[in-house]
Image 1 (cartoon, rainbow, N blue to C red):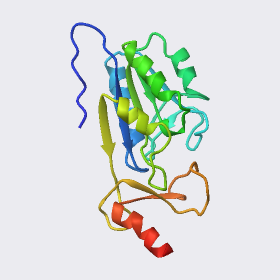
Image 2 (image 1 turned 90 degrees about the vertical axis):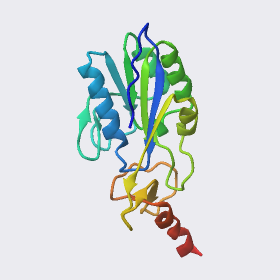
Image 3 (image 1 turned 90 degrees about the horizontal axis):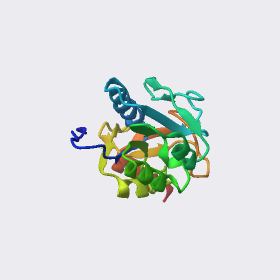
Length: 193
């Protein structure tokens, strides 16, 4: 469980990363933290990659339909330009951003901004996804969330792609992906032998 630091004596920035497989509640946790920041009367700006239009063109929407207004952006440098005079920056689907995102988050934190980033830590092949490994390395706080394996009911940390399509990025929901535990995820490899 993440406990927000009590900082006295000035404004200090930091980076929080929320990661896990698909259907683990990453976006829901991001929305929860951002809403709490708004309740505390902090100025919040929220961003998502413009390629992610699965639920809504502008809102960040969790699988359980919780939503919060965001600004879709084409690249991470735009976040720096749009995040002036804010206390908190939220970024969803970080794995889809360009390779400048870790430096952007670091710069925001140096400016005294709390940066909350959510994204998939692994792709459907079980490999580190996009800029997430670099963000995890720079993070002050990390929250790893787990889904429930649809095969056996154990905790799931893998995103199993049901669709037989190539390419790392395939935007989808339960039609294309399902959460699986390590054992059930690796069963696919056994069936290919």
